[in-house]
Length: 155
Image 1 (cartoon, rainbow, N blue to C red):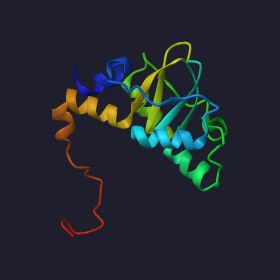
Image 2 (spheres, helix red, strand yellow):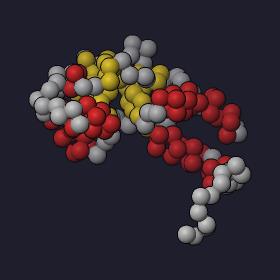
Image 3 (cartoon, rainbow, N blue to C red):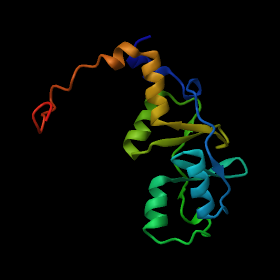
């Protein structure tokens, strides 16, 4: 299978999705940030029961937490991005890449038909999958002929 066909046919279920950090909506901001640091992850998926209700990212921590001077006891549901974009495990890599590109997302929760959390896909996961399965296409890409350098090479 060629690279382009793989993007259109390979399913998210074939990627090695991460378990992801999940927290209930009432979890305090300070606790979520501490757990994100401990797990060395860039986001926490907010779940009610098993259903995804929100996502809290490093960007949210900076803008809605630190810059807004939020109290560390503030429930995460007041600071999260509610109803985040999600991927179904049957979506293709092309769908994932398009969603991430258009929304400028680095992480997307993977859900089943009931919107129950199954895992997390990151940009890194997709790049790793593509480089493992299509090393010649990835590592041998020609330089962009339309890119103009702003400085001399090696400077």
